[in-house]
Image 1: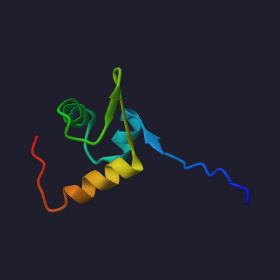
Image 2: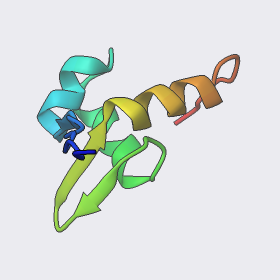
Image 3: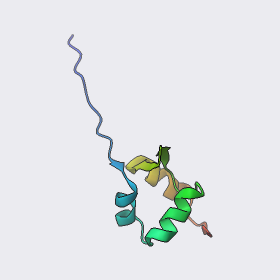
Image 4: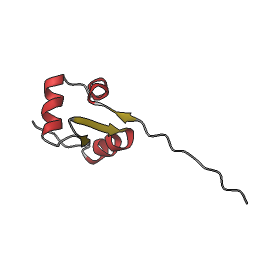
Length: 68
């Protein structure tokens, strides 16, 4: 039986991409990122996220109000 390699595509989003995804401005996004509110990984000065992280964060926060 031959094993087939299957690659999983991971959509990674930068801060610029997150501005297009979330319905708020650059300043609010920077505040939420710096406070650790949004689901990101910080590599150096770069914030990265993915479809899965964003989906999970939204589902975990349904019905809640995020004040900042």
